Length: 277
Image (spheres, rainbow, N blue to C red):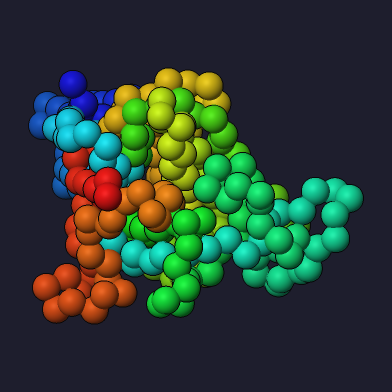
């Protein structure tokens, strides 16, 4: 049963007990001209903030065959069909440098939909679609959303890698609602389903959210909707899947529909991002 995410129970209980102790002293011994009550209320307020931050409610996980569920709570920033145009270079390969995104080799991986390495992607112009395209859904997590991330499919984690900006030990930390935040500090995870399908899910830090906490690792078997980590204080999660096998089931803010000006809201584990074609 989900109540608090991993690491959340101790600070929540600690600040609650501190508030109760201060209030008890104020009522029984001396309230220090009201200052003790003020400190007690501050402890209770901090308890509520921490409890909200670490909340981890249980979710009903859809059982539909072949679907891909959302790994995060939040609004859909955009849904876009993309193709790979480059990849991170090996040490002995030639590369081109971009001040924002770092070094790239000019050709993508041989099998881009296996997601073997971090690749550079661009939107596919209408009429130029191919079987090597991927759908990308970007989910913006506000500080008020649940921060726990869940596996989009049932399968094995085949790759989990942490990346920062080129030459940086931490960061960068561009606001998560901006397109450029895709190159913030991030953890890229690849899930492999029993039938060979691979799904790439990338946890991306933001200006406030600077700690990504994976709870699983390479080789771990995951159930659909199983918790596999969290981003503290929200931020963004991007999901990529093979485009010719799935159709998006959500509406992004880039669709500019008046019904969803911020994009459709989804919940980790229970909202369906993609349906099989």
